Each structure stands twice: as C-alpha cells, then as structure tokens.
Length: 195
Picture 1 (cartoon, rainbow, N blue to C red):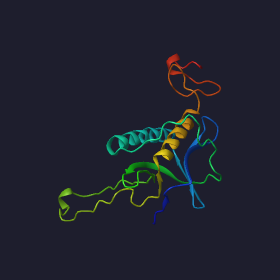
Picture 2: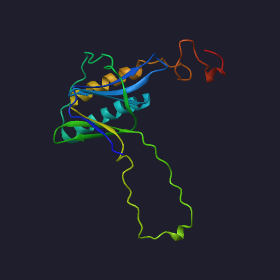
Picture 3: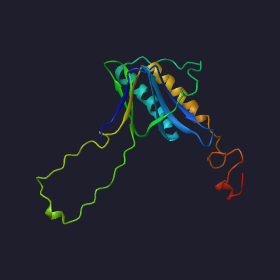
C-alpha cells in the first residue's frame, strides 16, 4: 500500500481549528496551498502540546542559532473558520518538529495513526537462527503524512491561533478542572452532586 506525503513548503495558510459546538468539537490541522486543501484530525491535547513545543523550538532556535524571532503581535491574526469542505485525510498519531537551520524555517510533520498489530510467534526461542535478523523498518514509514514548512513569523501566528482554539472550549470547573457543560456536570469534588 502506498502512502501519501502532503507537502506544503510553504503553505498559503496553515491553521488549527475545530468543527462542532463546545463539548463536541473535532480538532483539525488544515493546510492550503497550490490549489490543494488538506485537513487532518487530531485531539485537543495534541493541538495544545503542538503549540507548547513549537514555542520551545523557537526559543531554542533563537538561543542556539541566533534566529530573529518576531515579537508577539497585539493584533489578532487569522481568526477565520476552517476552509470548507473539511474532509479528514487521516487521524494524526504522531507529530514531529524540526528547525531547518539552512532555510531558518520550522518543519511540522503530522503522521497518520498506524494500526499496529502485535506479532505473536509460537514456538521455542531456541529455534531462531541468530543470523535471521529482521530489518526493523521505521514504524511510520508507510503512513500518510502532512509536512508543512513555516517561517518563524508564521509559526508564531500558528501558535497564537492554536492557543485561542484550545481555550475557546468549555470553561473548567473551579473545583475539579473538568469541563463544564452548559447544564453543569457531576463534580467528583462534590461527591457526585450535580454542579
């Protein structure tokens, strides 16, 4: 089975966004460029961690390579909804980040979640020939991926939008931290009483 690499180097637009009401939101990374539109699904925690790790990557690039980082702009950047249609290409299993020193760009790679089936071998371990080594391919080598290359300025804008998207959900309960539904929730700190 062949895999697809959706490469946008650079994209016209790369954003994190959601579809659906708070409490039922589906999170997506969406890249547009060259007449193509690719949307990949992921979890809210992945969006949050991606923003956090991108911030760390930019800070480290500045410290180690002297990269000029853009100041935090008080102006809100891209606040438009996701482009339609939002057709999920795949669900993200792994996110990879790198900084390309030669081009001073950030590379983000979202790799599809793989369905790994554990291999079960029956028989004695003594039957195995030590010369019969199985070449260990990289587990995500045959998985679809979305690869995006961003400038530090575009990365900063992505981080800010991703944080806004994550924080736009349901407010947390002040006691237990779980999200509050409009009708409240059963708070474990109140011994299950409706809050």
